[in-house]
Amino acid sequence: MNVLHLVQHFKIGGLEKMAVTLMQKSQFAHNSLIVSLEGKEQDALKEWPALAQFGHQMVSLNKSPKFDFSVLKKLTRLIKEHNIDVIHSHHIGPMLYASLVCLTNKNVRHVSTIHDAWYLNNFKQRLITKVLNSLTQINWVADAQVVANDFYQHTSIKADKTILNGIDFHQFTDINETNARNLLGLPLDKKLIGCSARLEPGKGHADLIQLLPELDSDIELVFAGNGSLMLSLQNAASVLGVFERVHFLGNVQHMQQFYSAINVMCLYSQREGLPLSILESMACGKVIVASDVGGISEVVTQEQGVLVGLNDLVGLKVALLKALNMKQGQCIREHIFSIADADQMSKAYDHFYNGLAL
Image (cartoon, rainbow, N blue to C red; front, side, top):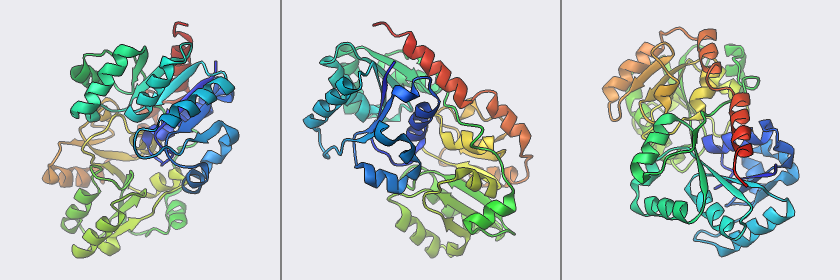
């Protein structure tokens, strides 16, 4: 079985990490490709050096900003050169190109993972999804049951399978807090609330900065990730007089160091599917504070953290203070290991690939 994973870009994010994990763990890994629509390989490797492990199995198509017909030709060439049996798309852009290329490559089966359903609030994207589903056979997999339910409500399309995201528990394990903080240049005597997410709208960074002046001075924020909001978030922290209490680390290559350095992981997003950052931090034994969106409630119970409604800064403040006093460690790791192991996720996808009709 030869599989081609298709993503929009190679910027570090949850669905990109998930595709990379499948490339590492799947029984078909040696016969697979991971392909991005946008960008060039050399630029991707600068931001995400770990991608170098894939060598010739990694391809960037350098797509133009608008719909690019040349991408269909490039994908067709890759399919023929590598005898691809399954094209596995991740999100709507890759799903669009994968569906169209399957129209002329009838022997290729198309699997598409629904990482979240918020984009279906847009009429155009909802229409594209419905039309492509009617024109081609798309085998839909949701990464959480709530995502499958939302997808059905928007499209009347039932997901064929729900497979929870999984992480590599050998990679994500708690290390000594002091060592982790020293490696990242973080203070040793502060309570650190971390957020691992790209600095983009809707991820909750601005809310945390807005709330910080109301928290005790020994509480600081740590952000792992780059994005378009870097400058505006730094300016907001400066205006509020808390710039020295917010640590912008950029892309962190060894995330177990980040999770080991913080006391609480907070992801106050407006929308999510089942974010890998939640699973990764729980694997390192960290208490979670998160917005009650997507599939987060399927993995975080009151023993592992606190979920907060959207647009509730008072509730967020209460949740953070409570989380800082909650028990962390092995009990949280054992909980998430039982439901979100990358090996089990990969086996489930391999089984799904094998079950597709020729």
